[in-house]
Every structure is written in C-alpha cells, then in structure tokens.
Length: 246
Image 1 (cartoon, rainbow, N blue to C red):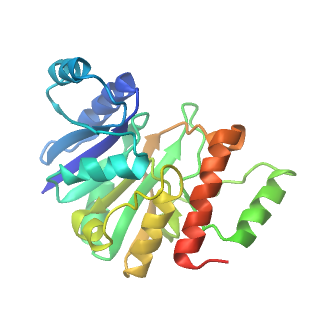
Image 2 (image 1 turned 60 degrees about the vertical axis):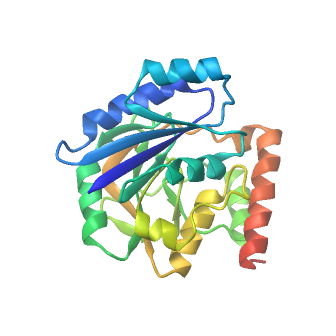
C-alpha cells in the first residue's frame, strides 16, 4: 500500500519543507510514501532547478499557470502513484493519529473522504467540517456571526459529516477517481465542499476523525478581504447553480 501526499505550493517553499518534516515524523515506517508538490508559483526554470536540487525527496510539478487550488491538486494527483491520496495545504503540520486514520479508512470501505481534527498553534480547535452551505443557512450563519462567535463543537468520536475543509483530506484513489477528481472550474473556495457533495451522491460517506490531529491556522481571507470575499461568493454561486440549490 502506497500513500501519496499532494501539497499545493504558492510562494511557500519554507512551509513545504516544514510540512515535509512533519509527514516524515508521523508517517508509519512500514508504509510506502511519496510527497508531491504542485506549484502554482510560475517560477523561472533556474528557480525550478534549484528547488529540485535542494530536496530530491520531493516530487515537484511546476504548473504552466496559476489555475487555483483544484487545478493544482489535479495536476499533482495526475502524477501520483499511491492507492491512498492525501491533499493538503503547505502550512499544515501533522501532530498525531495518522496511522489510526489510515486504518479507519481502509477498514471502512464506504468512506470516501476522511479528515482530522484541526487545531491552531495555541491548541484551539478550528473548523474542520460543516453542513452543506445553502442560501438559508448561509444567511443565518452570517446574521448569527454579528451577535456571537462561531461555536465549534467538540467531538471525540468519528462521525459522518456533510463536508470537510480541503486543508487536509485523505481518500482512496478508487473514491477520488469515481467522482472525476476536483472540479477545477473553481479557482478558490467551495471545491472541497463540491468534492464531498459528489462523494455523497456516489454513495460514499465523509468522515470527521478527531483521533487524528493536525495544526493549521487558516487565514479566513474571505472574512477580512473584499477581494477574497468576491472570489468566495463567485464559487458559492457556482456551487449552487451546479447542484440546483436555491
């Protein structure tokens, strides 16, 4: 059994190196592993050569354009040879429980995607999963946010959920290929929810697995930048149109 980690890189080489170290530290010694870096940074050829020479344990894919998250992931996965695929952001650090999560995925055939608990650098639990976004709960969530902080539930057992965020997703190649991969019509945002939606439609379940933990801050750019808010809304309306959600 082989596991392929696919990491998106966009002018974040140092994050990639730190992320690689956490993978090596946590990865079971009796499993085969490859780490693929799919770069949207449009580096010049001399820079590409430097990066390859700097760390030959990484498999670099230098994309011809910055096509966004889903595009870069699909480029990286196309070069992957693993039976298990893990897509992740470069600023993710694995903390514990990777072996348990792998075992859970393998022994539960109907699971399409599994994802860990996420904490920030201070140990505070972050959003890992949510209900599918509909127009009604989107409005409700934003109204509630004006009066209170987001309440994040603390779950201690694995549970089936609607969707998990794309900072870290583990899945079988079988499940990934059955839904046709990520939809690269999204530049940023909602591609993770879209993938989970199609997994559900194919009969797979999506599981939150809190016994595995990663550290990830998350920028929540769409909350603080009108530029990213526009990108998010374009993606969200595309998602609603695609699945006929009104």
